[in-house]
Amino acid sequence: TRYRIDLDESQRFYRNRGFVYWYSMDYLMYDGPAMPKPNLPPGVEIRPYADEHYEGFFRVMAETFIPQRRFYDFRPHDIREFRTAEDDREKVLTNKDNMFVLLEDGKLRGVLELDDNFIDSVGVDQAAKGRGYGKALMQYAVNVLRARGHQIVETSVVLGNIPAWRLYNTLGFRRVQVDEWACMWV
Image 1 (cartoon, rainbow, N blue to C red):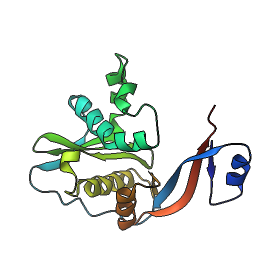
Image 2: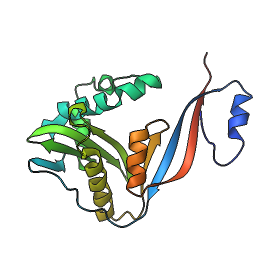
Image 3: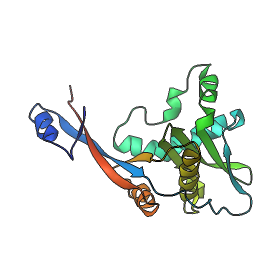
């Protein structure tokens, strides 16, 4: 079950019924001006997703989140296990206007997925961490959403993902809600 912990006594209600803490999620909001255009080095670009990026997109997305998914036991740990049907590529293409890739000399190094005014996922290849690509993808995402007419941009971060939380905070996002997830083991 999911409940807000910044509003009421929901936490106590569920604890008294045998639910145990699983994880917490901060929901963040940005309502500032457009971000500066990402300052990318030569040979690095952010562009819209295309079918040719399918395998790389899900490799980076999976590898980015496997440690976190294992730690919290989000199943499956590797999101590539969701991609099993023959028509998965076509389903992905229906959302391609909300997906972007960061390429470094033609090699896929970062991924971004949007959902309405929400920055759903940002992932950077392990080999490219520390180069500012996460920041560039976030700046790009905010600017895309602003260009689409959204005055408020939202995202979320799992408690404990300190690098992401610091990045979002540095960019001007602020916490607006905290949810806790609890479960009952049967």
